[in-house]
Length: 186
Image 1 (cartoon, rainbow, N blue to C red):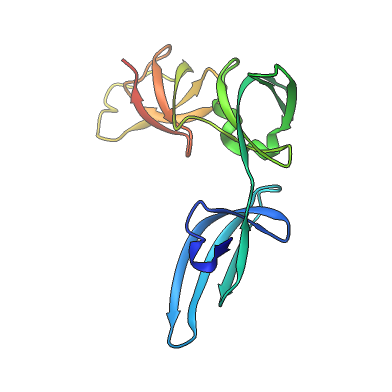
Image 2 (tube, helix red, strand yellow):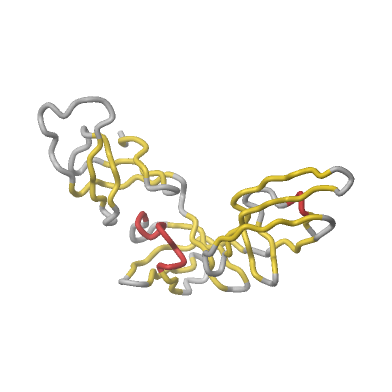
């Protein structure tokens, strides 16, 4: 059981039988009365966020989240298809649940599926992924001041801002949390 002060960032717990992840945490100590904990929590089933204040001796059950390695097979307009690497069972996940994750997955990539009561609630990618640039405009002579960026289309179809020295067919490393350019892969 978690007390209110155990609800630190990234803690996963049950509230009304629904799993939530803490995204922000702050604590205010009140004289004689104990603490008030203000948290911003994300519903792991539907992706909605809300702010809550807890005080006193409230207790929460930890959410039982299982993690499996799965292989990304392919996607269509609204769904991504995966295969469990141990049982070879195939399953599908709506792109709504994946958020921006589906922009950075290539066919046959191994990722982690987070399951709650047998239902996929999230797909976790590695923090940094190498991807090939398929299309980016050429540099215009004279555009050489510092921190000039241009848009590049990656092999997965994602668009990211890259420095002007990146060319077509370069492989770059992308941060999957925010879709930002990290470095050119050597």
